Amino acid sequence: MVPSQGSRLSAAPRSRQRGLTLLELLVVLSIAAIATAMAALALRDQGQQALQREGERLIALLEGQRAWSRSSGQPVRWVAVEGGFVFQGRVPARPPERWLSEGVQVQWPQAGAERALVLGPEPILAAQSVVLQLREQQLRLSTDGLAPFQVQRP
Image (cartoon, rainbow, N blue to C red; front, side):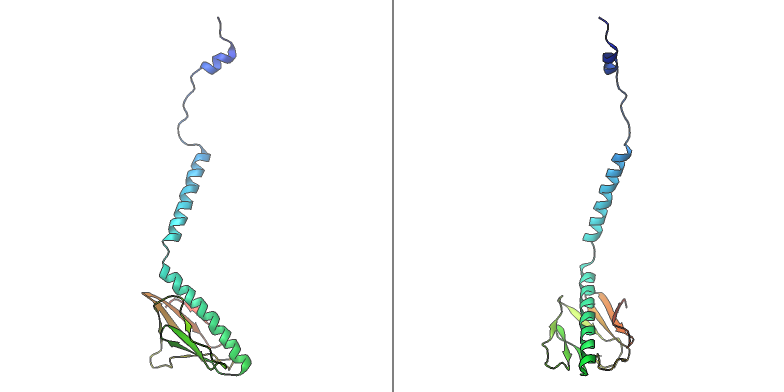
């Protein structure tokens, strides 16, 4: 019996494929990239994130009080207290705000300067800055007196 042409092709030994196809290589690289990104996010410094969040929150509060002081004509000062801060000069007075993270410390970069930030009511103020510290991380919040407060790395 003579095998047919179709069965002869199916009976022929197939050569084994060696190496990876381009699609398989792309899948492996994609998985490696996703794993690397997840590891980088997991290893990000939690103290720096918390301090950044504190700085952004404080800037929003300072600028809100600055606007209120200008519109009401009442002077407002920001003063650090144990475990938080208070805005002095508000009528009615507000209770002290707490830091979102435990252990935030306030440092004043100018020696002998007033230990408060003056927020108004004048539209142009003196240049001011304050340094927030959480463990070994530091963050400086400053203004030139005209522009809004900004976060700067000390």
